[in-house]
Length: 423
Ligand code: SF4
Image (cartoon, rainbow, N blue to C red; front, side):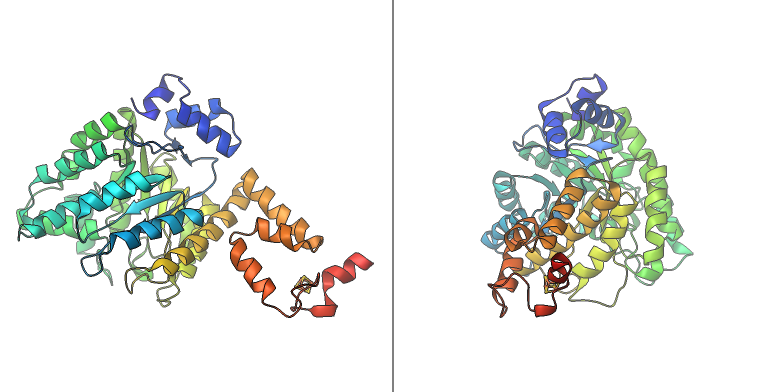
């Protein structure tokens, strides 16, 4: 049974208890929100780890993407990136590998990860076809469903499935031209397949098969936004919202089967459109947990997109987003290295924490206030302990001239806190 099916029967599972304890909320309330689909607990029945919830009233969670590419494939490096992501506070890992032995890498990630693991199964389907010297257009619909089931058996907790890229949603792109077209890998592949084969998206047409598999293993569906805007100028267009309307219907169908579901969102988006998009998505998808990449509020900062994503992510989290996918300084440029992963996770945590203060998440407010009090007391050890990255805070302080003094080199003897305290 899925967590949602247990919740609908009023059964409080071990996983619901874990979420309740971590979030300082009543188990009965977690259970009722899981039953309503406003909270999901992505945890495959074949994957053993401490469960984490995503959704209404909970701390904003963050995901770190790792994975090989065809041009850069080193399994050990990806496992090190996983460890770095966990060390700096990622709640989830997505293995987006597209190069090397994908089955082996995913097995290692699932075994090694102490947090939920997500995938985009269509990447593996594509890689298999390439190994057979075939193009993606030669894919058979059964290839996708076999791969989804294979990964479900392996223990994947949530899967991005681009079920909303349909003939209908794609038709809205025809007369409403974008600068950047389709930027989702899954979305662009499916569009190509549909056009070459003159057929509907199998993930939409045979959605009940998706539900059958996800119900059996309690895999949470992450409804992918295959038509997400990849440029600020393309945000909030007809194609994006046409897909969203379809995703809303697919949320209903998943809930009717007791299958857990979250919905993915943009993408590149001007700052003043973020709140509107979050509120609209929550309304259309009946308060399903929302998972965003960024959003990126400007397109001109390659090398610094972790900062751009954190700006958008903080606004999105404050507006009600539940799950942030990190961006690293390597975004749009190359595969992230280990330092990029660290920077990406920390930037996302800053965004999540900023949103959680607005949401009224108790632990976030407590940590914030503890830091403020430590600053008031000029208690540097306490400040380091409250910091998102204690190592960095300690390193910067100890490298300054006044490392042993209670004030710092910023204002020196003009330290405002000391002056105020003396008064
Ligand atoms: S010297 Fe300035 S920056 Fe440093 S602790 Fe005092 S008030 Fe804060």
